[in-house]
Length: 626
View 1 (tube, helix red, strand yellow):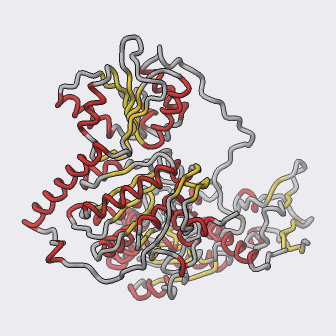
View 2 (cartoon, rainbow, N blue to C red):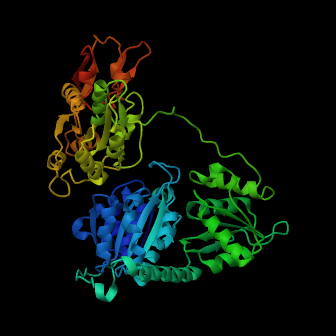
View 3 (cartoon, rainbow, N blue to C red):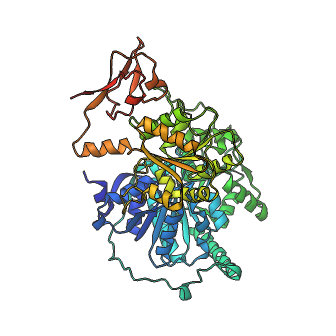
């Protein structure tokens, strides 16, 4: 069986069952992408993993992890205006970080071509909201492609890359969690990369201006709008915008019925059509912005009633209704009726219900498929041995009762849950220090403590740290340092030492002028609690770096080296059943038997020893297991 890495660079045509993210990488390679950049975020990390699976000397492009999404986008842009086809990818809310530069892209003459891949997340599977980035395409005048399957991800990326090169403009390529992670048999083309030509091609006189300021903004905006019109014309004939009539196209009860949809909901609707065996038409939009006006109006005029089904906001609905009104298209246009249908993923059960609410005589109401639940639900929790658990345990022991704690994005966001209850407010990556600063203003009675991970520190935390130094706000920052970007799959960051020389967080803080800094091992409860108390007693901005390697990453690396830890924790007979290890420290390796005794699940225990100092009677000790 061929490895994915070998298949991704296979010269011949081939077919295989692949994930949407993997299909995207093959499309990158075939289309001639020369520079790919990212900041990791679900549902897109597997794109980077697939690229990195190919040895660097065989990789047909330069790939880089960057400090944050804005930097990643700017690196890709710089490569593109220097003549290289480029691609940047990140998660939905990553576009917020990159937006300051992203909204400028359509006004630039991007001679090499540039595709901006975003992984939107209907259902908030791994995000703090359900942000619908179709709005960004409208705001920035950037065309948007929306694949619905891994096969479309492949074919549409090839089309988007070619269109971007031809039009010299950026393309937004919107995938969703389901599309990124779905698997499908995909037929791939040949791969015959030309030798890379790295000759600099940037020429501001011939291809510019690249300086949108004052009066120059208006001709550049005019260019962006004219290009958008050309893409609209292109969309009228593109096979990415297609009409499906799986059961014919005859009237039902004297009316022609149709649905307009895109992305995954369109495939769910198509499945509903096959099941119903009724002759409805589906207009599936692959290029969702700009809409192909003529083709949409023809569809409306050819139907008596049309239902618009889309995930999240009524973006297409509002545009199509406006278009129909202006054109005098006499077609009744329906939209989703329930507020709940503007949230979450729309699978076949939900789209069937939406169809049945609109046309009950065509789609009979039915019960959704029942999912058997065989396991009891449990809250998300940190891995056995996680340094963040030890840090939260120690910090909580140090805090006065009325302290305010501010969370940030990362594995340590799980500290919000019981029993730690650390972090009462959360906005986005890097917000914690700015929010904590605001909470400290005029606050003489409650201690304020913020948390941030080491990856987020470099990603978006530094500006607020600088601000805290300038104003010397009276709060304590706890840097949860585990040496990796753990939440999204152990990608490197500026302080991990995997890209270049590690940039030590303590040195950065010292250089910025932070007056109080203590760095302790999160496992060392005594030192951590002492450091926290000193930090909170310090008047002004103080930092405690609670450091310990990500144990999931560490144990995996040790196993690969044949050095798996055989030590396991053992509960001795002097256990007084205070359950500190369960109720306060909450390592998932501990369990209570029917008789009230505490035992260790050896399948979960990694033998790290972080729990030992939490037992009030020292009832925990190591035992060797074979």
